[in-house]
Structures are given as structure tokens and as C-alpha cells.
Amino acid sequence: MRVFGSIKRSSSILKNISRITNSIITTTTRPYSSYGSNNLPLQYTIHDIRNKYLKGIPISMGTAYDYITASWVNKAQYDMLLIGDSLAMTSLGYDSTTEVPFDEFKYHIKSVCRNREGPALVVSDMPFGSFESSIESGISNAIELLKLSPRLNTLKVEVGLLSTDKYTVEFVKQLCSRGIPVMGHIGLTPQRANSLGGFKVQGNKDPMEIVEIYKTAKKLQEIGCWSILLEAVPYRVATLITNCLSVPTIGIGAGNGTSGQVLVIADMLGMQPNAHTPKFVNKYNNLFETAYASLTQYKKDVETRKFPETGVHTFKIKDEIYDESLRIIEKNGL
Image (cartoon, rainbow, N blue to C red; front, side, top):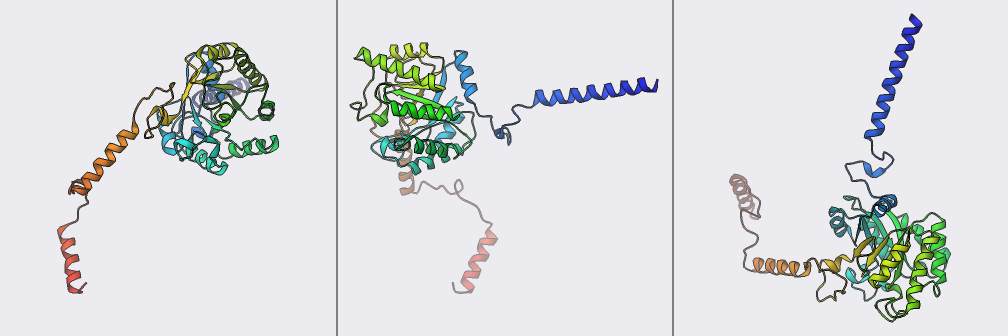
């Protein structure tokens, strides 16, 4: 009977241990993630984005260039956040994306990644000049970018047509073979705007060009790109490519047939004065006019002494303390 009782007690203990273990497992979400602590939201992974794609749920993506704009995108619960080299023109005053220095671009990556208030998967461009010299230096620069922050999940690389840009295709292949996640970018590639004759729609005049864009997308998928960005291509062309791929596509000026959409935050929010707004942009606000009006009003309030308002924007002091300070000043002839 003692043996039987011991077995029963052991069995009961094992059941309790199993129950406690199962409770821990089921109530702990992704305990391996360092971003599950400090009440910070868990960051989306590539698998999360792919699951949305497989379910047919449109994927939202927006650009951010610093801590503040990243906080906006994360607060809005976007699926993905792009640190685009468009920051050269929208934030830094350069005339072209090709002008931004590599070190300056890295500064903005670190600024964006300091914001951890939302779930967005973070994507960074590889800016012009960071991979063109050689595949070896490009791989080194890609690794350097990814080491800037654990929140940076994947890189985006602009790729020309398969028939003319074998170098970048090979570079992307080498990145993917090393386990570096890559989003390919085809169609209008701003870093190659000069060779494309400017910022023009691609694949809208020559059937063979459409075939080339199609073949390039298929090749990028084949060599390991987990996603493809399609910029400034006709709606039907983007839809055709999307339907023939098994990875998500993100469109910008590519219509509603892609798996998701991205817009430049400065364009969609009207952050720049007299800026040209591309046809494909839906302008959701005019922050420049709002900021200008507010700053102008502040200037008027200062000049008319309306601001700061006593009792509203000022701090109080007890009469006896103030009077004592006056007495000390007068007594000491200060």
C-alpha cells in the first residue's frame, strides 16, 4: 500500500508539473523575443507578413525617416515601415536620392529604429553607392546596415531589367544565399532614373519591356527575394506579375492589384511646400499649411504679448519668498 500511495503521489506531482508547464507555454507569447519585454509590442516578422499575404489581407507600408515619423507609422499600426532613400529629398534637402552619403543614411536608420512603439516590420533601402562598387563591398555594407539595430529586419534593393542588370541580380542572389532577407524593387527605380530617361512609368509602351519586367520579378523570386516592390508600372502589368508570383508584392503607383501598398509619408501628408505630388499619391493632409499657420500665429502672439499668458503658461511663487528676495537685493545693493 505504501508503494501504491507513493506512485499515486508521484503521479499527482507529475500532473501538477505538466499543468504548470502547459500554462506557462500557453500564456507566454514568443518568450524568445527581446521586444516582448517592457510592455513593448511584438514586432512583425516576415512570416507574419507572409501569413497576411496568404490570407489575402492587403499589406500596409509607409515610409519614416526619423524617430518622430516612425512613431506616427507605428502608432497607426502599419504592417511595414520603409526607411527609404527618398529621405534625401524629403528630409535632407538633396536634389536626388543618389546624393545621400552612406553614413548620413545610417544615422536615420538608427533614429527610426529607436522607436519601438508599434509592430511594423522595418525595411531599409540600400542607398546608391552602397553596393555598386563590388559584390563583396555590397555584402559588407548590407551586414553593416543590419547590425545597426535588431529592429531592422530586411533590406530593399533596386534592380534593373534582367537582361541589362545581371550584376544586381547576382548581388541579390548572394545576399539571399547568406540568409539576408531582401525585398526586390523593380519598375521605376529612382537610383537609375538617369538611365531610364527620368521618373517615368515603366512597361506602358513596349510589350517586350513588360516581358522583361515580368521575367525580372520571376527571377528575383527564384533567387530568394521574399517580396517584390513594383513602382510606377501600369495596373494590369502589376496585377499580372502579382498573380504569377508566390511572394507578396508591394505597389507604389502600381494600382490595387498588388498584395499591399506603400507611399512616401511626405507626399501623403503634404509635408513640403510647393512639392510636386505624383499622380498615384492620395494626399491625406497638408501638414505644411497646418504648420505654417500655427507658426505664423505663434509669431503674432509673441509680438502682441498674447503669449505667454500669465497664470496659464507661467509658474507661481509665494509672495513672502519673492518679497524676501527683493529685500536681500536691496540690502546688498545688488
